[in-house]
Image (cartoon, rainbow, N blue to C red):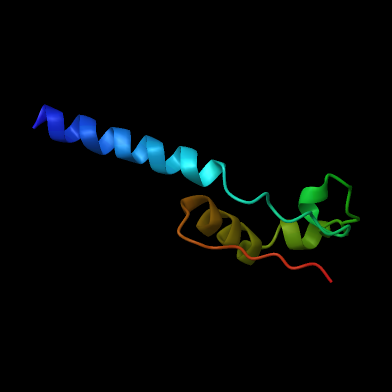
Length: 73
């Protein structure tokens, strides 16, 4: 059993090393949030921050289980 676990760990390591040697990642577009440039953001109004709906949304997001997809122009 120990030999099987060791073999699986070695195969996983080889697969990871092979994947890292693949083609380089595509360059980031100038408007990408990952490019390191700041993006202007409109502040959330205080009445929204104080609303029960907003507080419920934040609580749900903190509990997890959501996928948040952001798209730039």
